[in-house]
Amino acid sequence: MVVLNRIYTKTGDAGQTALADGSRVAKHDLRVAAYGTVDELNATLGLARLHADDDTNAALARIQNDLFDLGADLARPAMEKDAEAGYPVLRVIETQLTRLESEIDAMVARLEPLRSFILPGGTPLAAHLHLCRTVARRAEREATALAATDTANPLAVKYLNRLSDWFFCAARIANDEGRADVLWVPGGNR
Image 1 (cartoon, rainbow, N blue to C red):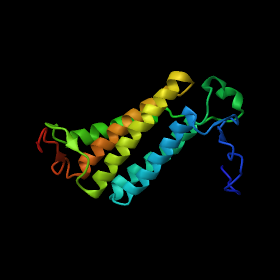
Image 2 (image 1 turned 30 degrees about the vertical axis):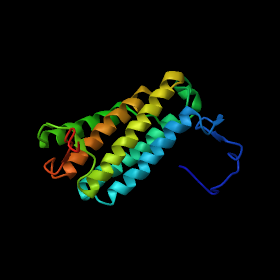
Image 3 (image 1 turned 60 degrees about the vertical axis):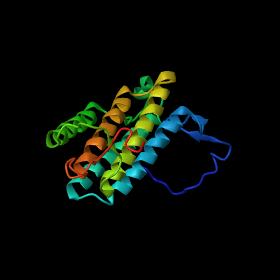
């Protein structure tokens, strides 16, 4: 259980922060950027939930919880040392990924195939979900940059990739199952 009895500690005043394993890195470190963007994604998801019906809200709540798991995963380097931690280390696992894939497949089954790219927008929920999608893509880019230079759970990167697809499909569902999607008209304003 997490206990926060002080909000400010002053330990980051010199531009460093502690990772989940206790090591300290610069606040602009790739790992901090990756889990910081996951935190930003979680906040944008909180805005989307304001517009969601009960079923969608429940799905978004599950994803918000997964995002905390993902942030904890990204905040802990050196996966090979997980056994030395003395407690179960929180990592994204395959079942979290397969749940997203199953939900994506169910949404796609309700949608007509796209015949054009769509513009982010439509209903308030769809617009917020498109924002979530773009922040998830940025988090994925930062997680892949981290994975290229340091240790990162491959399932964490895959989760972010599936999650942006999930948001895309959910945005289409929120747009009257795609019937109210805003279609791109190439060169439409020339």
